[in-house]
Length: 289
Image (cartoon, rainbow, N blue to C red; front, side, top):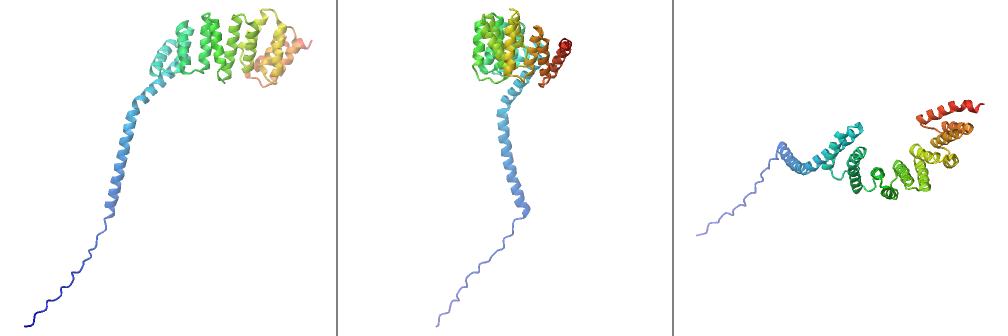
């Protein structure tokens, strides 16, 4: 009997199923969720940083406010409130040189020289090139009669890299006063001249020179020094004004008139313009005789 043939099985057809694309709003939602997660992480990090900085920032804000109050009360002449504010400023920021200087100045005005000296020392500890602290410390030392210490203070200051012309002016002028108190008249004169050359618009050094020479009735040397200054700085109206005053004092109205006239032509300040104009009007009748 013939064997039956077994039909060959057909291979199973592979059915390709169509994949539905993800709806667009689902993809967008997932992107937004990812961004929100990143933003939450960033916010958490920022909050941690701010929390970490909160205390030092608060302290800095408090220190700035109290330092400002210290200066403002001082400018208003309310020294009691200024002292309290300066104490608070120093407590909040123990390295604040300006607060030490303001408090030291109030102590100095009130005659508390030891406390003033301690504050100026502290200011220079934290800001070694602070010209204002040097100048105030020198004044306190002079008022205490410690002239050699005051001289050492000014020498230290003037050896430093201080470029502010006002501080240099007061440094030289005040050192000149110290030299004068120590009997070093020639050195005092040199410092007064240096002071004038740094700031010819400020009056103290002129007055110190004039007092020094007029006390000796020495008009010639005073005039010679002022003439040297005019020759060196012929464009400076303040120097011309002061030499004109010496000419007038010594009975030389013609020379005085010329200096006051040149002063007006040298772009003086409004105040100096008024002063030179007044002198011209007063001596003009003497010149016309």
